[in-house]
Image (cartoon, rainbow, N blue to C red; front, top):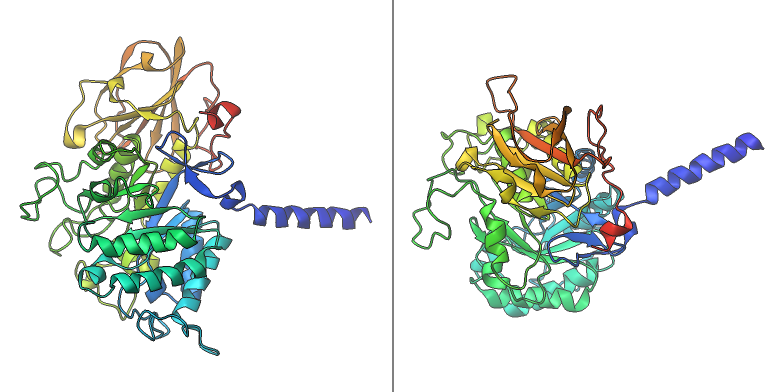
Length: 485
């Protein structure tokens, strides 16, 4: 009997652990400080997404499940997908997204595993793994081409909202690589139609490269948080567009979009929803260009989050297209682009989790961007960027430059200091220091990029241990102080 009781106890524990999904903390909402996301019970939510744009169209059931398993293992909690990328779109089973225009009354056919059945399966598999699906309802180019009218948007929005309003893991994304002033009446109609039916899920807008959604939708009642797309171009690589929305030679400075978004009122959370992808040609369109590397995608992630973003979206050339034999690549030579499943082993894909662990290792809602921590900052790749709470500060250093930092910006007569490698999350304790302006220098072990974060903490706090090697995947457990910030 005692053995049976123990077995039953373990089974119940396993069931409980299986049931402990993120939304067990309640629905996602905007935090009271209007800069971050949280669950209804006050638990922080740090957005860490992958761009699995063509997941619904190109992967079958077993492939989709494997991809989502690997994403969960790598720490991702959101997957951004193109719900449809054609009118109709077709999935790997040859099933169309539309069979009677935008009338979905007969979309579910007996004995047919249809397009939306497959979408249901993907959403349920993601939920099983604790992952949200960021649903770009329709890619922007289709709206620009007139494939969705205002009346169509009402029908489509009604269908989507009724089908998915009770799924726990949905985040709605309007737009899709498009400016908000291109057929804005369609986006407004689609968004408000969904919001009128679905009261439970957050909504945002994915804009064109080098734009922020706040440019058009800052006062839209349906938009809960902003996105910007810093894009794929290097410094000085322009499109030749007279309406280029950013200053010359700032193409890689994705940190600047946070403050420029918050210049619009009211303030809402913001994140980089499409930075440079790992292993994609610089600038996208010339296969002879160099490829963005893991250290490039790390730099974009830390720059954006330390500037105040509520999370970050990663992307990979092969994964976002779900490339595999039989499909041509859109970016790069076909012979030298990986398959999506090979790309799951690339370093950048697996390194984003260290940023998430870092941010969640300290009191969350008090964190602010504060560049006054840094004395004599540099430009472009030599730029340091700092974020801090009341009793901790974090400084990202891409080029291993000397850092002259003002430790008096946080509490404590003494400060304990660590270095964290952005490439592997490895922590190294550097010692205890006086509460004053100090110069620190991490000496690279190789001739390559060894970017990382200097962590300084009020010595009276115990967020980290001196002998700690890695940050916990569980993160900092918020106290009543944090939840009441």
